[in-house]
Amino acid sequence: MRAKTAISMLLCILLAAGPAIGVGQASSPTALTLEDAVAAAYAGNPQILGATASQSGATAGVRAARAAMFPRIGAAETATESTDPVFAFGARLRQGRFTAADFSPNFLNNPGPTSDYMSTAGVDWTVFDSGRARHEVRGAEAALTASRRQADATAQNVAFATIRAYYRALLANDEKSTTLAAVERAQAFARETHDRVDAGMALVADAMQADVELAQRQEDEAEAESNSVLAYSDLAATLGDPMKTFTLAIPPGTPGEIVQQLPELQQEALHKRPDLLALRSRVASATEQVKASRSAFGPQVGTFANVQADNPHPLSGGATNWTVGGKIELQVFDGGARRAEVSKASADAQVAQAALKQLETQAVLDVQRAFYARQTAQRKYAISDAMLSQTRESLRTAQDRYRAGLVTVAEVLRQQEQLGAMELDRTQALHQWWIASAQLRLATGELVLPTAGVKP
Image (cartoon, rainbow, N blue to C red; front, side):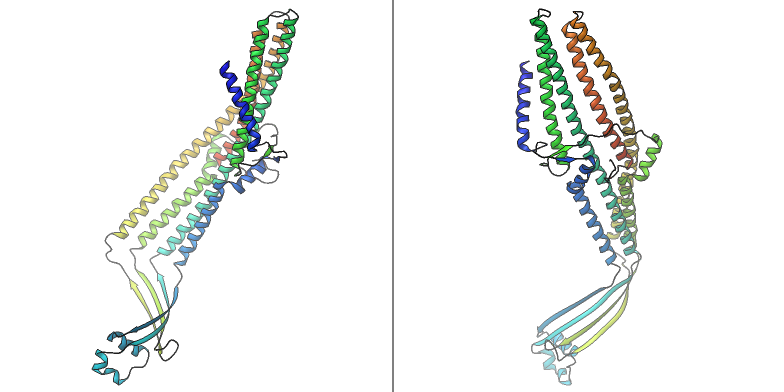
């Protein structure tokens, strides 16, 4: 008894601190529907922000891969002064200032300082690379598709986390109301018992047992209040704003019936789940990388062109020349680097394929677990709802029999405790039913995104 009293005092202290942290305690909290909660999570949850940044990176990867298919154009300006004989000879020749006197052995062996201001512009274009660039572009595009699919999966995961937190907060509210109703019943019965003791119709021990029952129900109420504060805090954190205050809308009725059978839902998951689609795109990207690495063994054909102006002074006094050409390159030996690149790309592709197979198996199991969890929650709700009315009637009968002296106070207290437990069971089963329904839609890849008038 003392331990429970200490727990009760601790919970009261936590509840007193609740308004100070502002969770669900604001003077004018925002009314939050489930759709609004999911939309807020999309706007503020860090996972969504990270998925968006990942898509931006994948988009840049596609642009980088495509850039390799275009010619490279560059320009440079170089200023040089040197007494190197070869440089002096070549510079005067390129500048168009070479004369017969420049053949003098004295000049050739000991030229004075020679200046050259060289301006160059050139184009270098690999017109054929055995398909490497094409495969790299396809791989980057598949990676971008995977990033987008993964963003969809992240969005659905965040939506489910929000739905779960929302219904848990609603459950905490309902549990708080249920425990409060139990306290009120216990208070009423305790008053009645004391009145019966005063009238000489009951034992003092009956009143003492009723008081103990009331204290226990009050401790349950304090714990439920604390759980409600924490549930609101969890929901606010899921929305990306731990200091957010709000009230929650009451969900209408019970979830709808499942139309499809389990095998249909499992097939649907294999074709629609965004995380599976993302991994399939990653397998395609890895396959293209294998092809790109193998292309390194083929020849490369390129063209080039450049124009060059050499002047003895920064802006004038020289000459201009140009060069155009083509080249074919075939690497014969590289120490095994290309072969190692192919082996690594092939291993990465095999890892991706193995992960895909594992995820497909996991998706089938996820649907099965979610399907039966939803059925279980639905049955538990139906059973607890049916039993609740019977338990209420049992309590009423026990109270009447106690007043008639046919049963002890322990029977009434037992029925009161059982009624409170049945009320909690039905409340928990209802909210678990909603959560299990969302879990099933998540497992099949069909968790509805928030739109006007549509409940996730």
